[in-house]
Image 1: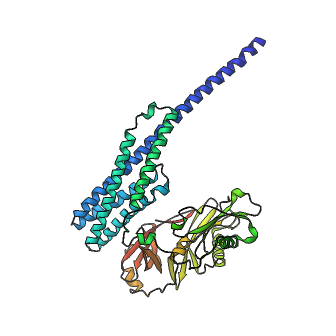
Image 2: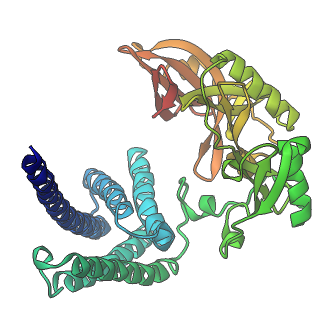
Image 3: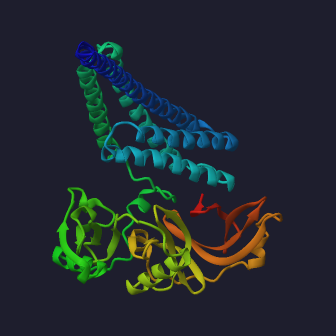
Length: 455
């Protein structure tokens, strides 16, 4: 029996060693295969991005010489789709988003401008000489984009090593080198894209919209100390244990709403559960607040949460706000509130409020859209009647409610009749221009147990 005990332990130890070696080898193999798959995925995404940009350039070139309305609509639709596809693939590459901001803006504007020209064509308008000049500039920039991507692709393809034959360390070096090449080239491209002339047109990604000066801030400047007091008051002075400024950032002055940002630790709360808040440097308005605390369980209803959100907004100076849509997630519910003025819903003046469903605490607030757009408005009288607006709606559309609403359109706003209803079992909102009866926008409502989304 003693002899048996003597060989059992070494045998078990040897078996464990073999299993450990096998497991280690499998992990090593898996890691290598995963690394190769990641490299291959990035190269595929890069290749796809390049192909989409090539398609944008080719279609822009054709649109420059085409005189056919139908042909132009097809070409512009293709440009719009390819620009969106390129943007999607570019966003998945291992690049710092700050280093591709201007490139993303360029792709947004290519798609947005194409859509604007499609609208013009559908209204019977021809492309003007100024619009052709803009298309020419976009075509030149897409050509520059293509040259940069082609050069970068050549560098990567000419890498001396085959990924399958590299050691883990070699592959890590190659991956880092490739990423540095991506980064360097894209930063160079960004510098070129930043020199693009301003794109003048009426669209959500036009320069005049992106560079729009906030209308709801006022003019008085506040110091950091004043901003800290505003942050404390907003959260509740008695609740605050510590306030720390953070992340002013070198590009802070170029932000749409330059702000002081703070980390706020409430009383009897670990610093890891800090609340974050931003206060505008002009006007001293709270732009956003985020409290990332977990929610243990649901104790209050959606209706109770909405009442708490409305009370909170009133206390913070946001009167006459109405909830339109909501979405539940992780034990909290996010409400979208729009300003109500003279029985008209003002959608550009939007505030978001997030309520924890365990105790009704406000754990999120975002007034950035409101602060950019809010101003004293003289809402015009509708130029067509509600009945006349109905004539622009399909007969089969089952209308459930009608009201007046101001919606954003490019750099401006437009007064519409808002028709909510159903068509073939699905929920929609149709906006009809209250001046000329034109169909301005259609939204589909997607409802589920968590709330309502608009598409």
